[in-house]
Length: 130
Image 1: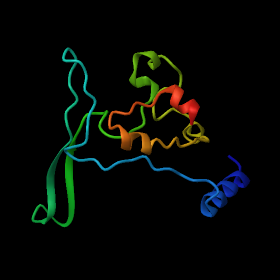
Image 2: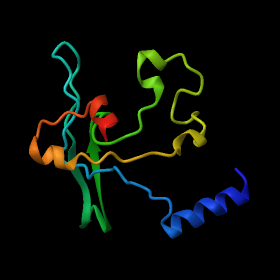
Image 3: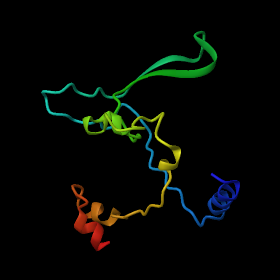
Image 4: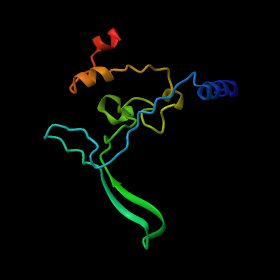
């Protein structure tokens, strides 16, 4: 990537002409996890075990052990994760070219639909109507 392109991108981010949408959500014991059919191994819910909390185990820091399934919360899912992508080249998070992580996008705001119907399902027809 050229220096000029990076400068253009940084300027656009600072000016607000490019908007970055953060889709992450906080993780906790109540975070929903993928629910697979009973014949498959279930994903465990997130659990937190305190290692130290400014005490004898760690007087100057607070940290935890987290246990969670790979599909807990928002995450990047590489093609290698699924059988359909297991044989593709550059299919894991450490080999996918970083240029593929940034692209133009739109946000389809369906918050009013969800406000009217908690079970709202976004369909291709609704996207086309938007």
